[in-house]
Length: 234
Image 1 (cartoon, rainbow, N blue to C red):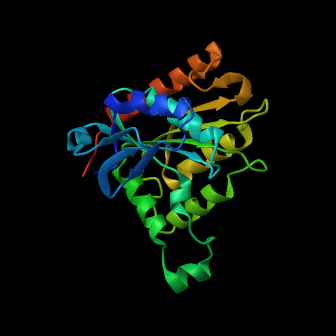
Image 2 (cartoon, rainbow, N blue to C red; image 1 turned 135 degrees about the vertical axis):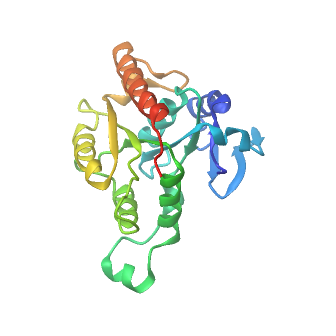
């Protein structure tokens, strides 16, 4: 499947993201070309199809989303995987309602998002907390894709995270997501919370607090273990 970024280029992703290019990675699941701003263009990445494919996004549409930055940074620490780095702005669609579904069917962005879920071997999400819950953008995507098939997340291993400017580290939304995802066939294998983002995350370095970085690496190790040990059964 096109659109996945091989691990050998992960260092480029983190370099561009952490040094002021949070939108540097532009991926299209229908196009095997990966464009990294004006810096690099990689083509013909079929070689990486044998790697485990990880779907990665911050559950926010903010241009400077701290959760997208955390998600991309964490994914860049993984080894022997290819990455699908998403921007939720690419999945804009009408607010879900049963009337809209009956009148117009499932929107194309929801079908596209769901196909990426299917093609992935694991999922990393970092949640923005809006009034103690999901962002409206993520909730809308969640609502639409839950209408496509009974299994929303296809039993994929999930690393769930949250970051916030304050001291709770998005714990409200992280706890809600951790409790909810199994009901939609998501396999939550690890979680991570980053409080005081401005203090504990720096461009060019990522997570700076040693104890929090250790916690993140532990969560990533748990996630990697499950992803690489997963066996598909027909």
